Image (cartoon, rainbow, N blue to C red; front, top):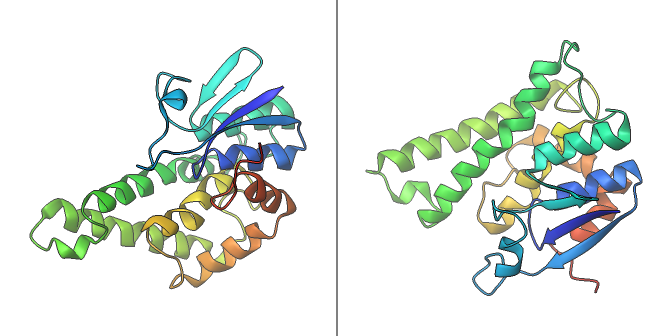
Length: 211
C-alpha cells in the first residue's frame, strides 16, 4: 500500500493527484501545520530532509515531488505521464519538470521581504528577484500561448508539477495569474480533470483531515 504522509497545504497534493490519475489505492497519513504554519515535529522526523511530500511504497521511503511523480509514472503507469529520453520533446519536459523550484525560491524570498519586492528599491537582491518573478511567469504565459500542455503535446508529470505554484502560492502572497490569459486558460483546463478535482477535495489547500 502506498502511503502519502500529507502535510496540510503542501506540495504533497501533487502525489495524491498522480495516484488518482493512475487509479491506484493509497492511504493518507495527515499532518496539520502548527499555529506558526510550520510542519510539526512528527513530520520532520519522517525523513532526514524534513520536507513534504514524504511517501512510502512498501519499505521504500521517498521525498521530492518530481522524483516521486516519475517513480509512480514508471512503476505503475508504464511511463505514460513521462517523456522518454529519445522523444524530441524530452529536453523540454526536463525543463518544465524543474522550472518550479526556481519559482518557489523567488516566492520564499518575497515572503521573507514582507511580500513586496518593490518596497525595497535599494535592495539589489529584491530587485533581481522581482525581475525574475515577472520573467518566469511571462515566460510560462508565452510558452502556453499555442499549447494545451507544457510538454510533448500531452498531459505529463510536468503539468502536475506546475499547478501548485499557480493555484496554491497565490493564496499565501505569491504572484497571481489573472493578467496571464494563457496561464489562466491552462489552469482552468487542468482544473477540470476529474482526478485533479478529487485530489484537491482530499488533499488540496482547502481540504481538512477526514480522520
